[in-house]
Length: 458
Image (tube, rainbow, N blue to C red; front, side, top):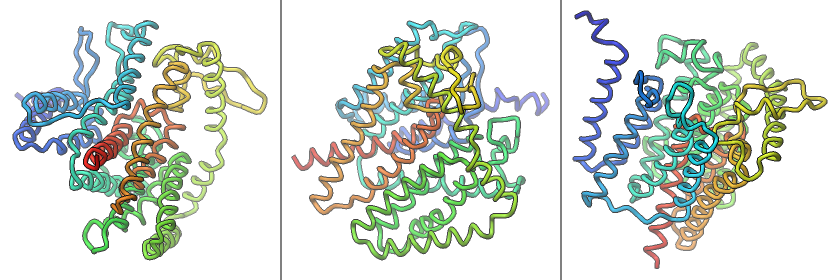
């Protein structure tokens, strides 16, 4: 048997499944479930596009992160039923999440989109956009039960950030031999080629995660006074991640990162942390000085072109017109989950001053998209999820502040949430489970901390 036949894509995927299964069994035995969450993120980051196809079956093609997600859920259930893990009761957040997913399934069944042409299940958007992130929220609420694990999540985000920042610089300076995965270099794969798009092969998504990295890097500067590796890493990321975000040439990523950065700076000034403020100002000056070494004529031209390009604005204005018209005609239940692109051609309307008609594009707005596809009922449910999470974080902040406890993690979470919300207005996050799941894991950590802290004080 030749090596070419032995190492087919299907064989490699099956070997990957066996390997990840063995790792998960190891995690089960060693009671370190949090590492399973990080492993899922890494598989999703690097092996998302490796898929198993089931010809002649109702099952859709299954990617590695979905197989690993099934392992994760399975082990979580085993841990619960074996008594090794005690799960908390559902709160209002989980009930609203469950209602939203049930409503989406009913919407797909009612509009006939649950089974696509060819007899395959059509639940990919629901899985990536909501089931994965909401499940991660519930899991993280039950496994991040101490300060060490909460801090470990920030460390994980920063480690991902080091990789993404390095890759962004390598892409920008065309040091192609060091870029991995190799599909990043394929102009026919993904979008936004010649921007820093990373393993997401999408500049806007890469910029969103880099925004998470930027605000997370503040944690160790605010939380610790002693010098250690993580404070050094924080300073490096605070200098380099804004440049990496700039290299994505994506305005939503720029605005989201700036908004998150501004929120943290506001709290630092409010708390009178003069030394921290001075460090941040020095870092900002270093960033602007550093940019002078990277901005050649081509970079200035491209950044100026992206900053003043009106075509994406016109596309989105057209999309909003279609969404509004769609909502007006179907205000309660919408046109059906996942049906916007299919029906949008019937709802565009030419308006003076808008030169493009974005027929065929997805919604490009996570919230307006829900309003068009699921009406006011679906929009109310998803908005309630975010509002309830925000309320829980505010309660935690007030309780910690009342007891003179550290509030830095909550402040970082708020900045994290701003980055996510701002970018969600310009990107349909239901296609990118890595970003949504990262936010909801952090939200689960905060909500669990609030619940446990309130219970301890009762």
